[in-house]
Amino acid sequence: MNVQVVSRSGKVIEANLEVTSRSGGEPTVADLKRAFHAEKKPMYPERQRWTYDGKVLDKDATTLASCGVPASGGKLVFKDLGPQIGWRTVFMLEYLGPLLIYPFFWHLDTLIYGQKVERNRTQRIAYMMLMAHFLKREYETVFVHRFSHGTMPLSNLFKNSFHYWILSGVLIAWRVFAPNGAPEHSDTYVAACVALYAFGQMSNYMTHAILRDLRPPGSTARKIPYGYGFNLVSCPNYFFEAVSWTAVLLLTQSWATLVFIIFAVGQMYLWAVKKHKAYKKEFPNYPKDRKAMFPFIA
Image (cartoon, rainbow, N blue to C red; front, side, top):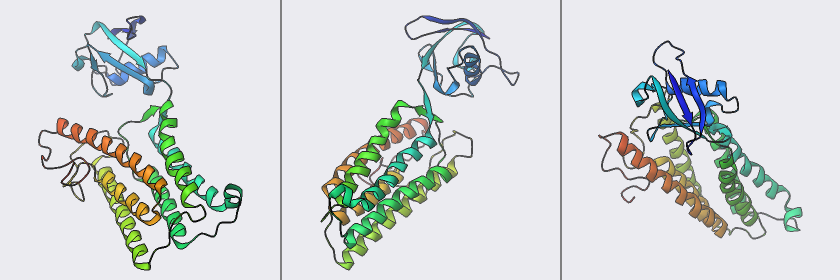
């Protein structure tokens, strides 16, 4: 198969790119990416985006013929997505920030606050909660999560990291670990906060495990999730994440924690709505009574 490659502005990039199949069958989108990479070395497959006749060719295993591309003379539009970075690496770097920032503020209190801070029980428990949360995130990134998309634009890393490094890391640590940064509570109140936090964390992990088991290793296939939490909402992992952070807020009673939660829950809700719509579009038999993130609400 020979195709013409043009930019979105119509400029010809490759007048006659030969695309052959490695398997001997019909050339696929993956074969197209490999062929283009062979001609344009900097354009490795992960940074390529292709469209034909207005349709995005986003599944590597799809044959070009099934997308309507003729055996010769087809005009394909190429877009450079820019330098890419693996999603697993992105998550590990994002979560690493708070794991470095919390101990920095905790142990270098004289440098940061100009005095030795005598932390109370609330602050000590909050510190353990925060560290445990992001250690769990790192563990899940390495051993649990399976990613449907291999990479994301490198430029997005800095935007995404702001959320974790600055709002969750610096802002919460600076305020909660400060002198008088969190109030004392009764034993019963502290126990209730810890119990709510543990419930949210364990439930979040269980939903992540369900999502992992839906997708065999190396596969990007999607299925309808069922089970713990999924019978009520499409994204119970986000809901239980919000539950955990609510426990931290109730414990610390800090405006810094509240600011982070507003941004975090707002973003998770937007993601949940997007995934909820994608599920309903992809699966005609998707349960109609499920909400996106909040049971019985939205």
